[in-house]
Image (cartoon, rainbow, N blue to C red; front, top):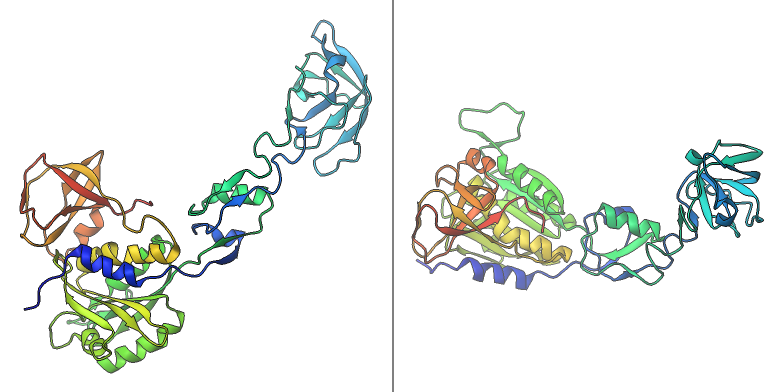
Amino acid sequence: MSELVSVSDHLARILDAIEPLPVYEQALIETLGLTAAEDVAAPMPLPAFDNSAMDGYAVDAQDVATASEDQPIHLPVVGEIGAGQARLLAMSPGTAVKIMTGAPVPQGCTAVVPYEWTDRGVAQVRITQAPKPGQHIRRAGEDVQTGDLVVSEGTVIGPRHLGLLAAVGKAGVMSRPRPRVVVMSTGSELRDPGVALGHDSVYDANSFMLAAAVKAAGGIAYRVASVPDDAHSFVEALGDQLVRADIVVTSGGVSAGDYDVVKEALSKLGTVWFGGVAMQPGKPQGFGVVGDDETPIFTLPGNPVSAYVSFMTFVLPAIRKLAGRRPFIRPARTARITHGLTSIEGKTQFVRASYDASVATPVGGHGSHLIGDLAESNAFIVLPREVTRVAPGDSVHVVLLDEDV
């Protein structure tokens, strides 16, 4: 029997073979969730010009310095400025100009009087409270100066970054595209949800779960209908998908049974490694390249928990590297375990768990088919190869499953 490969060695082999996708400028709205591949400096200030922070009247603050309820100041209204409708560029002392929020203040204006401090007059305005010099005026560049770094290389662009980039006039950003991931399940017993089951068939949970995991990781998922246990059918289906794949992920057909068609079909190519990884669940693994473009392919075990553990451990870091997202490997944190556990020496154990406030509670049994327990979990407790037992209250390493890093 061949020696098992460690989790870290198998992951290192994968990451060494994965190259980040090429960088190109993408339309701004398409960059949400992508990683910026450039430093973006502001080509203009924000605000771009001095503008009003209130609906009210532009005035020279000196003209209304003594205004009060008992001694109001009356000024003639000589014009009106709306946002995007700035026809009046300057005003004279002793006058007022009606102005809307966001409109540029005219030359000669040193404060804005809000409507609430006036009678909202049209030809003449009655002002009952004095603004301080500069009050209610947004100064050009007080938010962002020309040349300020607004997004740094490596930033995952979120809605707020996108809004800032739009505000400074950026129509696109240099970034890597979303990785395209083809997800395939094999097994003659598999049926799509919604189809009637026979006495010997089951619903294909893996392809839906893995496709969803791809989307959650920021990739584009192409789920392929399940392929029967026939090597020729698998090779044909795989060949049809390579044109749209940056990587391929299969589940099932990689053990040592009579119907493990993925292993049977790909072993003949000589470009895909199959073997055992020292982990539980998820021992049978395969990784290599296929097709003229040498597309990376991951062949994962067929049991749902094994497939998901394998995806999070090996496929997710590869997707993140393709997309230029760091860190590639989801960091572990420390938690106190509520129940004791035993583990097989020499194998990294991934235990489904519920994590809350630095406390990890194991969920369910060890069976790799227990997808109900998997759905109740939000973390994996990771027990290293040399650890065979932990007691209640011990400190353990935990990887959160839904954390975006």
